[in-house]
Length: 260
Ligand code: CO8
Image (cartoon, rainbow, N blue to C red; front, side, top):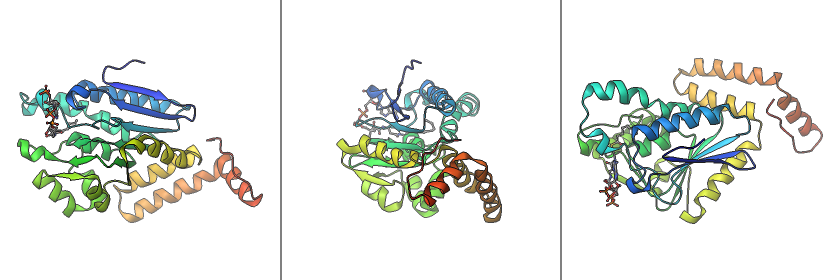
């Protein structure tokens, strides 16, 4: 399937890469690009051959935010209707029931930081720059910055980022817990792939349940989250992978998971 702003490929190990490809605008996220992200997310979620997903701008910029030129002339009703609905591409990415890793180099600003935040883990290169500069444009983050960021790094750090609109380098983001790891730019994609590999050597059903428990649990009170976890935990005992994983332990060998 061909896309205008995305390059999508899946390797022999089942690791799909979504590469944003609008370099002339530093991968600014226009509505068409966000809609394409939603289409790809649906496609990769359904494809059983895909075990993990990497979202990246490659060694160039990740994304310099929502497309300011596209948004400049819009009014509230435009944003509430068309824009608000189309932004679901982000949520579709977040709901892919497989590990999704952001590999971030260069600018990840505004909607770019927010796009990284819908991924399960973020690997950054030493050149990565994150920030939510919306406030400097007279607006606020609109694709999860005020919601996902405080859940990840705590409200005080998130408020500093949102209120000041400052830019933060990769090391500062590692320190505040926004990114999982920082590597030299030439190692970015290899590192993201290695992280994906370390996840997908485990069973796909257990991975999907683990992701659902963490993501759903973030929106629940502790005891509702624990109840949800207990149901998922128990249901996994009806999978072949659980029988295989525990048999392999007893037989002192590596398990061969089938995702069943
Ligand atoms: N939107 C549109 N075009 C952009 C954007 C953007 N966000 N960022 C860069 N570009 C364009 C520039 O206009 C320029 O185009 P042209 O050559 O036609 O003038 C080209 O990309 C290269 O950019 P610069 O010449 O500015 O490159 P510099 O290296 O000098 O600066 C910066 C790079 C610092 C990244 C600078 O471009 C910049 O500050 N960009 C805007 C960053 C920003 O404010 N981002 C937040 C945008 S608002 C937002 O994200 C709200 C999201 C709401 C949800 C939407 C979901 C996606």
